Length: 421
Image 1 (cartoon, one colour):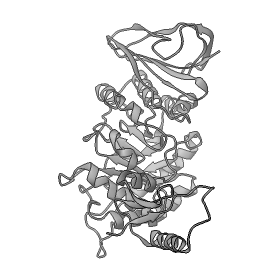
Image 2 (image 1 turned 90 degrees about the horizontal axis):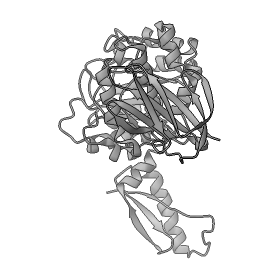
Image 3 (image 1 turned 180 degrees about the vertical axis):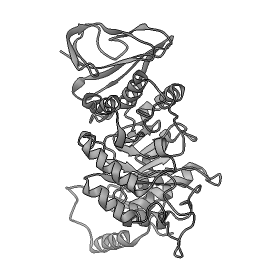
């Protein structure tokens, strides 16, 4: 087996190596430049004067250091609204709309094509091929168009389903995606031949890294093997749930399933309770407001799932709330979570940069009710006085002490950022 080899050293590295040691080090560097990826590497141990094997997971973490996902990704995905009814004109128009609506300026940058973009068979060289009837110009031309808008293009693959799968073709498909200028890969788990995600996803992670192109890697294995516990060494985000539907019960169940993995998320790797349904028509405005608020607090990817070419004023207002988006994109990168629940009256909260705290009061019951967050619920000392900024009303309360509360209609929420005085 061939191993990648690296040398770790510090600025105070001793220059008193013997000639033999120097020759050995040169040989190691040469080998490291030519070795293929594998499950372990050799590491020079300066203090002990020998070499040790780097664990597989350390190796993968280094491979995944693609500089992406420092905050949750923001953008759009075709599946929730269009499913397989996609074509290149739709993608171009969506990129245009992302800019013209002002969403791009707010941070929405990925235009992600989901399933059904490819022909049913690979070409004579075994390459994936865009469907000629719907993507006649090809993916490279489409990526160029999206990039000219200042945006990034995402694509979809899986083990095998509607299109040829990437199982066993990871290196070839990763090179294809990179040659097209792809910036984001959603990698699904369909037709996985009963191979564990823990074994199936790392080869694509390494293949993407080997292309030399930074490609955000989104694992979509539906939370089947608790990816939060292992996927941060493999991908930039990982689905913690099955697919979302444009229904209240589906949305809240995804929020709850995702919540228990909060401690595993952070810069570079995010829990993903699936894409946004805001604007697709299956929920009320207040339910969509809660959907967007919880996803933002939970540091979930904010991937719009409606037709942004035809945004109504309410949907645009929800998706364009700079203050709510700022919670999602906070540099501290700590996922907020449910901290209190009594008879479907809930408090969700999480720390932000500069000692601030984001708080959501959420009435999940079927009738109007008062929801209260005490300082002990959200991690503040009892005597603390805060400034409370209402992120949806865009109003501020000064010198709030002890608790914050609100009367809320059924399924409605309030979202605040509290700043200790």
